[in-house]
Image (cartoon, rainbow over all chains, first blue to last red; front, side, top):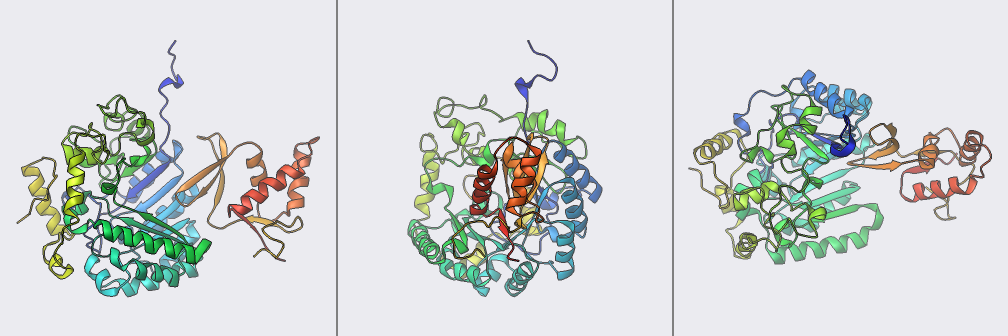
Length: 396
Length: 98
């Protein structure tokens, strides 16, 4: 019955390629989702290697391209990437802090066919923004926001929310309105990578979340259709897991600066899986054949309670990385799910977030900023004890 | 901006795609698609044929006429207008006042 080219094992996708073209970044955000050990990675892909990767993914039907980082504008070949990938037929999204986005560059991006720019903002007040990104960037970002409007791009703002800035949500929304933002995503940080290191300083309390949602709803009612506002609570506050990546290796291909191909931003941390490098393999083999990408595709890998769960086709058992980080086994149910025997790990963290925490000024002294020095420290710690990190281990 | 007659398209004005959308044929989908920031909608069959003609150079009436030439014998007018009204309501297309 089986014949060559039979559709029975046909693997669709990817539809979306995210290229973390560099891990260099002028900011030092405490909630960054880049791998904590990025400073120990090998050299970045060259322009030609990136274009080869994009071409191969496009042949498989990828239509959306995210150019991100680090700060992608730290590389001087983004103009070439935008123009070439746009010609290939991609819808090209630039995900940037705005630092390095000059008029000369934005004009070249426009010319090259860039589809949209997502601008990240850490906070609306200059002081807290500078604290959270650890550089003085707020004025610059406001200028960049003007430039984006001038070049007739929709103004898309991403604001990462957490315990230290969520109480400023009204100011953040008013700032977004003043800037003429059309889309605003207010997403609480998810606890991976740097944000996992800093989880106890970043997770908001329940009253903080309730207040923020109430203010957001009032704001939505006032501005109507002029602005779309998305508000995302931390998944720890949910009782069903997120449908992470729309299912493992179904839709999303992440390519790291050093060429490692991954089914999500964080999967590099998973033990026992070998992920291929785009320098050594073409994207077709990586996506359709490589053991790493096949590992958690479909549901054969599932254990109980997922295996017999009626919701498994909806949320795919949640996030493999979160299951590994919190339970030590990536094939467990994401413990966000209240059917998981490990759900208490989540509720304990949520309870901890209801306790008083030190004031921001004190947190600033102990929180882990994303920089090369801390990255090397964390890499050394993790290679010494490659174990899941449920609790934040201090690095000294 | 639309006039005071509500969100209705005028048959004698040209229609175009909004800037942030990209319309193309996708072999992997075997369909025309509309791409926008972080998303895609498939426009199979007649939807794709209509949208292919939304290029800023034709009025609604011209699109209807063009399709009736391409697919003779069918009375397409209402279907085309319904689809374009829906596309307009979704914010995919607009009309220039001129």
